[in-house]
Image (cartoon, rainbow, N blue to C red):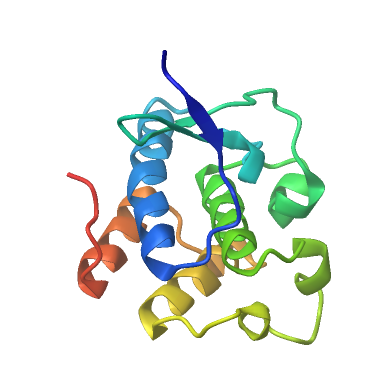
Length: 156
């Protein structure tokens, strides 16, 4: 029997790099077909045992507002919207704090971290979750490049 486990709050930087390395190829496959997920949140991720493969569930088109990109709230959903939601989900995993508490706060999300992150992951997550779509990564390939430069294992 194949067991699965929903994504739990993640406490380590290594686990976030692993999540990104497994989630980004899934998004790339969708984006390469001209599709946008549009409803990513921590509840969308399921780890399958024993292979520890990652699957995305809950493909409903119904988004959770706290994980939804600003442009998506205005009716425009693009690849960068999925990247935003993935970044917010990663930050939730690291902090355990609802995005509603830090998204519009003058206190940066990094202040909610139980332990500091490397500058490379902190910068990557900050850019993934930029409010202005033009300040955000536009494609999965851009994120892969940053992961490679940071020494994180980007998928082949």
